[in-house]
Figure 1 (cartoon, rainbow, N blue to C red):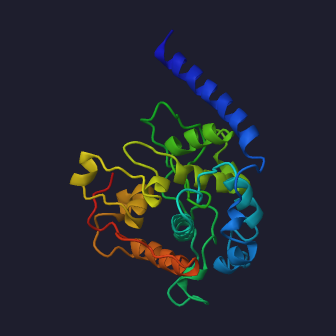
Figure 2: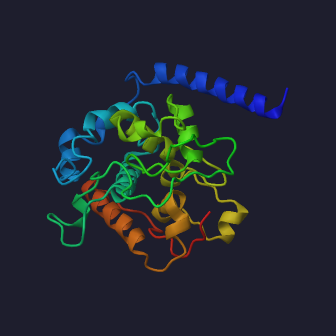
Figure 3: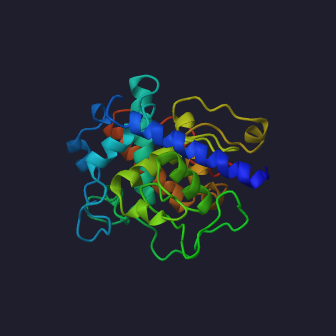
Length: 274
């Protein structure tokens, strides 16, 4: 059997297994994220997400977030209460920056405008890596940023879809059309290791074990490493990058709301990207 055919069979088998997993794990049996964040608190954090000026108004609902989180029972449910709250604050901070509609003098401050956008504005490319033959781009499709984490590139849409039960290569638009799937892609990216990167979850719950290469690149545990995982190629290794500062600002605000400290190593200016 040709290796390409074998790989397709493996992908189909994995896809089927994930569909079975989704059918059994997302029914609400796991601990609900609502124990850490109520609807009232969610709405107060994302104060302007449903304003008419925000293109995503009405899209990012609390109910969809809670429903999606049930498929990731370890999310904000690992370690002690402080660790769980800190991870939740870090996740909300990162998605807030990715979808922010805020500016320096915005009403209620620059950090009250998370979840304003559901997809990238004026993408500069189709985000198709044609060299990636495992997750080949579909004709006419673009893989620009969509959803809370702004999922990008065919090599992310493909495995996200496989894991979550949708065709990420043929139907990437579903991430900006279906609120539950949008939240699931953000949580999938947060929870999933993509070597050589560890997962954002591992970093925030103290399970990151740096390799020799990580140590040489000064990739130390903390919120800054999470930024490196998400967008380090564009933001890390740059002194006082404004995008990194915005992420930190959101995190500091949310950490205060959840009454936890942020921990060390908030920026990635001295880290090498992956």
